[in-house]
Image (tube, rainbow, N blue to C red; front, side):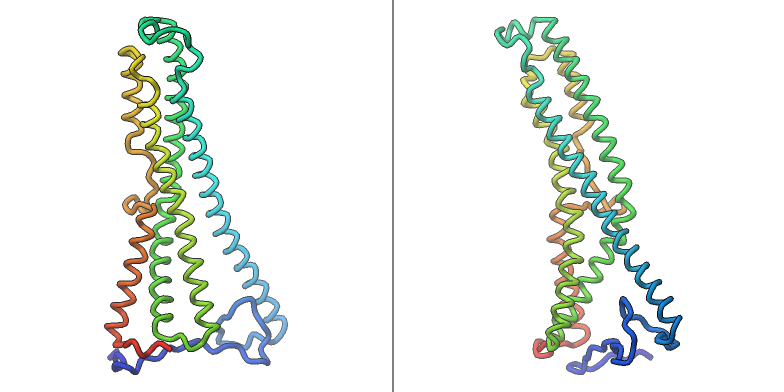
Length: 270
């Protein structure tokens, strides 16, 4: 039978650190055998070092690849919006609006430019959908592990702060874990805002000078991009700025609930 400690009897248990006689490994591990003798020590040291490097490079490579793709797409949307806002520039600038509206040359020239912009817009949306698919499954464990790490570390920090070095280590771990989620959420929010703002650029492109054919093309373009690009974890949870606030609120609620269930009072933390 599992027994929970009484109120005020909660204690944190930490793993035993290597003694002075133990040879140092890249990270602390548990082993049923003595790892100090050679060549076992050298083999374990190499395996742990290579595993740590590959894990680090894997995380860094994925995060930077995501950041590069999103920032590149954001810049492309900015360029597209400038093209749409200035789509009539240089075409019969000295003519009146009535002359432009009735001019076949003006309408055909704007249509050619709009076709280029529409094709560019379609490719950007396809690029964005590929990013959504690329991140959908990967971000599910990212969210779960971030939440779990913040709850556990937050609970430990709220119950025992007697060891300054341990407190600093837990705080740094929590901060870096949250920053990794920030690295996904903020660019995702910027990407969504830029992809939707294309509609505003279309509205500001002097559409009142366009004939029915041009207005119909603009309408289709607006319908195609009205949802924008939304990066979601598992296809359900939006990765954006509000998620960061929601995550912190849920972490604080979970830590408070754990303290209440285990019976940790405010005098436990030192």
